[in-house]
Image 1 (cartoon, helix red, strand yellow):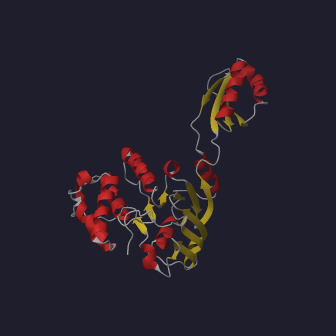
Image 2: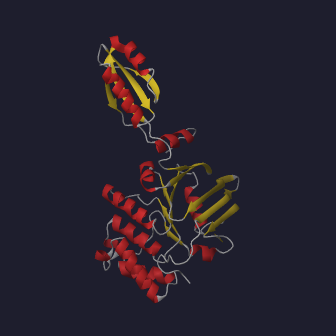
Image 3: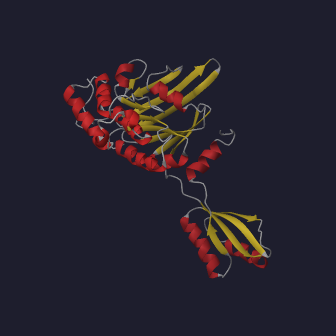
Length: 325
């Protein structure tokens, strides 16, 4: 029998998803090649990679739409191949462009999906009420889905996925087609969902991963390159220096002994008589030391640059051998 909504009375294993040596081959082509990772309870793990990296194939194997060529996948300790029905009962899935019945009202659709999950009547009513509350759907409960905005349709798709209190919520490119406000709202919804279950999300948008994920798994050509905890690495800061060309030597000497200065490169300067450099500081404290040193000597002007985040830097470094489209 399906669990009631987010029942916390029973002990919960810490590892919700265990993927070991997962491969999927189509002839000689390996769409997924020996991938292993875990998703912990109440964690958001992001799958990140360019088109063709294997993200969607992995999701389809986890949800039982595809059989793996090798390896094992367990949901809550249940093998998705040997006992697929029991494993799927523990999953809530929101595919990219989730199919919804536009002629149905929101309540009708949730009722229909809950019955497909086999929820008893009382559990279904509780699940529907809780899903509507958490996803702010009460105001549109009797509205046909086809009349809803893209943002509300995405909320309905998530609501049907969590009706039965899954241990794992899977979302494939959930921010596609949403406007900025809807994207911001969805971030909050995902973090709220992660209070009760593990969340596995794919996205092409690195900034979104940094805002919602606890860890990110970077894929390329079907291979897992790394699993990185968000915020684990220090944030480097880009800076630009300008000074009279006659003081170039003094600037270089002044910066030579500043701890945390990672790089200093000359840049072309449009204005005659001026010199410019691009710097990289290892963190905000190092940037402050650089600014204080220059200010104390009465040298140069300093301005911050819009630099790529640590996740962007890591992603570009790991995928440097492949053009991304």
